[in-house]
Image (tube, rainbow, N blue to C red; front, side, top):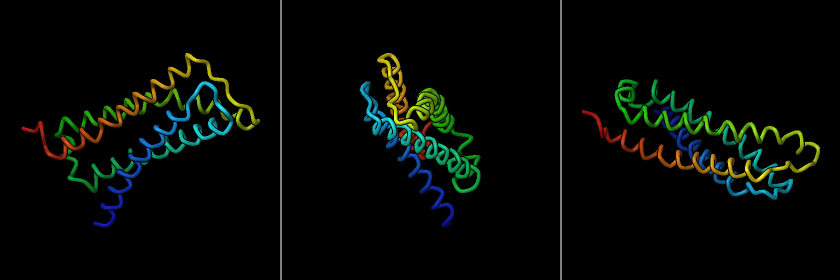
Length: 151
């Protein structure tokens, strides 16, 4: 029982960290970046990636070992919708992550990365879409937990 509780806790905590780090990225992402803000964005994105990985791993553990059983999840269409939203959010995060990784060399040399307006808008929109996706996931989980849509 303790392991199940810890896995559930890590699942929820890492989900909140994903959302929080995305909010921080969105807050710090501006066209006129300074060195400190750019470093923070790279760190937040790394934390986002780590926490998203923990969400995925603990989610798999919950489905297979510590949740209501794989039959419960795999027979629920809202489970598949929730997983699909998570995967779409993950795919959308690839572009910002690749961009932020590209900043690392400049940051190591003490230079502020340049950010064109078009790229800033693209990054900003992607992060906002990711945040919207992360607001849908708990709704889908709540619907799934109440067995709505199951005949």
